Length: 281
Image (tube, rainbow, N blue to C red; front, side):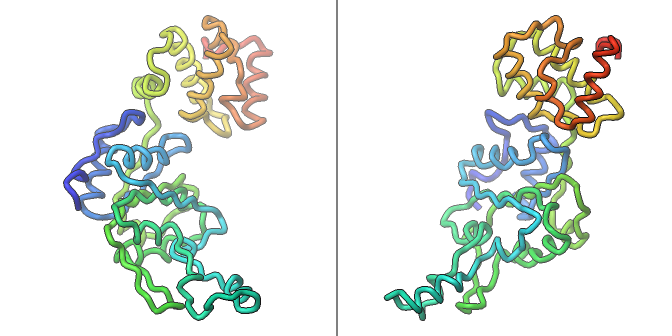
């Protein structure tokens, strides 16, 4: 490990708590994946980008879907292309290696320099997916059956794994990870995040937007609470429209930027129609 990897101290566009920075640095020192959980919109994915920027490393992102298999991250053997070439091509199809395409994990292992590997939203895949990666993430190698070749990481990548906690992950997988939960930021931390993204905004606008935002999040019947990213989008909408700052808490303009479920939006309209105000909530 090179000296520049000693510590992660945050980045210019990411507000990290001391606990989060410690978790990152422990995972680097112990050479274990860092599993990050938290509400959607709390900056889990952006953490990997911040580490990449801070440590000057390339970022490789493996975005997980419900259909993703562990094998997809290692390599794919393109049998269709080989069959096509054998029938219509002029090349030597006996060289199987030219039909092996590395996945994101394979790319990270074969990189000449250390990289940050983000395995994003691992809980979207089926339950066996994490277990199928135990050997590869632990030993930092995998075997290509078609070429009888073992791919071993040239330099161990920094592995960041995110989860929205939609499914419980297997204990065997959890034992191999450093774990950190990103709590939803309180208002003081949120103001730091706003300043990073927008610089010095009008204080009255920030005060009104934060007051409305946190009061909405306190509502018990919401199907989906607004996230940090939605607050940032809302602030931008308020700025671009020149919204009346004094009426923001009462009228909640552009509510569709904050709330994304019909039931939640209907409930907000009902509150306003009945003459209620979040100021008295």
